[in-house]
Image (cartoon, rainbow, N blue to C red):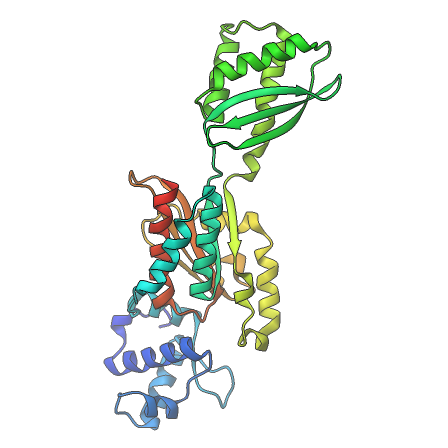
Length: 347
């Protein structure tokens, strides 16, 4: 009975259920029969409404938090409403313009993504989440700067003007001419390639002994490229914006839940895995309460959408997290629009 699909409800039950859910999502408070009879056009007496609400409670779709209070939707009821009854409200022209403006700002892509996520957070009154690959520019130059007898600075210059440095340990017996030989070889070899492409080419040439390098210089070349492989644990990049939105007036009545949610947001590896699970589908994924183990304790909902390039590749995932009492009809299309906007700058 608790898993009854929406079409198994009577028209009267469906109408009462809709009013209860929409009122609860709007106010966050349980809804009583007298309130429904006053604000809705159901043309039912409070007694009739109470009987219907009792049936919906027995079906597992509504719950009464207190014996004298009204009803509120259960997690099962919210899922039924989202999947079968919700009527989406497309973002307004002002909301679309705000998101597009943030996405279109100049500067590094990661800054634009973070700014767009902040805009989504502010408009949805949730915390905004986005999971994207770390930008990997094509390489223009790769050099070494000696620091001491046993250490050097590996300097990587991207074609976008970015510069990254890593300290590497030098092989024993290294002299300045060998250091320069390794730097010259790398600059000639990696120019125009991504880091992954450069590593593959260098490994292939060294393996086939096509590189005019002695063993010491070859060891330095491999070590110089290897220090960037440590970045693998930091890719993809998870950006979280707007945690303060989770602490609103209603949240002060449930500080333990909010505190639990903020603690859960610290576990970025787990959040990244959750968002990554949304990559496989075409549609927006909605995780309500305990449907997602990560946020089960705080009773939160996550809405996530894959970001797809024109060729269909998934280049990221964007979403929001907030209380289960979300305005799903408004927030889901907003996440969809943000995903489409980010696709244009991440493709």
